[in-house]
Amino acid sequence: MTLIKKLTKSREVSSLLFLIVLFLIVGFINFDFLTASNILACFNDSVVFTLLAVGMAFTIFTGEIDVSIGANLGFSATVVGSLLRDGHSWLFAFAVGIAIGALIGLFNGWGVACLKIPSLIFTLGTNGLLRGMIYIYAGGAWVENLPAKFTSYSSKPLLGNLTVYYAVALVAVIAIHFMLTKTKKGKYFIAVGDNAGGATLVGIPAVQTKIWAYVLCGVFAAVASIIYASRIGFVTSIAGNGYEMKAVAACVIGGISLTGGVGSVIGASIGAVIMSSVSRILVFMGFSSDYDNTITGFMLITIVVVDSLMQRHAAEKIRRERLTARATNTATQKGGE
View 1: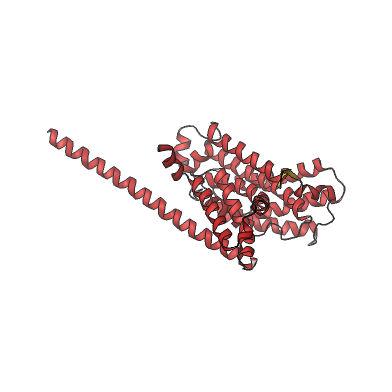
View 2 (view 1 turned 135 degrees about the vertical axis):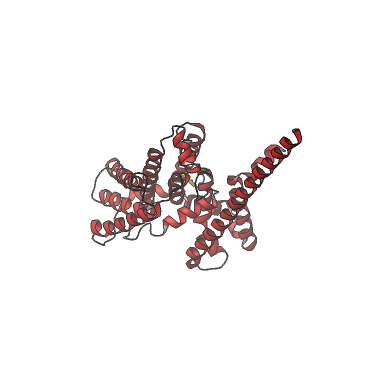
């Protein structure tokens, strides 16, 4: 019974239940939605957002945010796609793309952690910088004619209709979850987000941890860019535009608090499935996919407000308990006299 209560209070379980209920409601409206191939398609389509959400989770865990993650994906995809198009080896192209993502993350980490510039402002500036660099690098043109073998991997099945890309992403999420929850340094991210000052006092390097969070966020954006280029087959000058909002929404829907120190990458991956399924759900419900961004924004605002109210209620409850304890101790002391 205790285990059941613990599970029901878990943010990840709540997100999973929300996903299941959402799918059942859509299936009730249109039974064609509840087919194995369609459900698996929802998971396969979420691979890019899953990687972006995991990367974003690292920064949010530490109490920060990265709104340049979509532009990071776009620039990395442009570079990787152009290198592959020009005949360079896959290994070289992937290494360059991941290095670019890591450097962008390092730049963001330096600005936020070292210079103490608000993360929203600094990464917003990075977003504009990268968007301009995409146009300069590609000359405003699309990156097309990617190798057929490279693009064919996007639909390559591993088990049934489950693609290789999503299977690898799923394994990565599980591995990172264990790293964050079972290793000493992995727990630093949550500790810094929960109380950066307190973490520093007990010997946790808060500045270095935030820098690493941004570097990892950049690396995941770069890996997502490779998969993005493979799935789409070309890269436009606006690739990844708006993806930062979906990544943040996936994290929040997955139970990660925007104030930091709460949540898990498993929750973020579940949130990514929900966010990537919105367009498909709208089609099955008879609506235009043009409502995608509107619904995403509405869901993000609603959940952020609910999360804020819950945290305020929890803080108020703790304050009342402390006041009650102090009053009880005072009364006991007076009684003893």
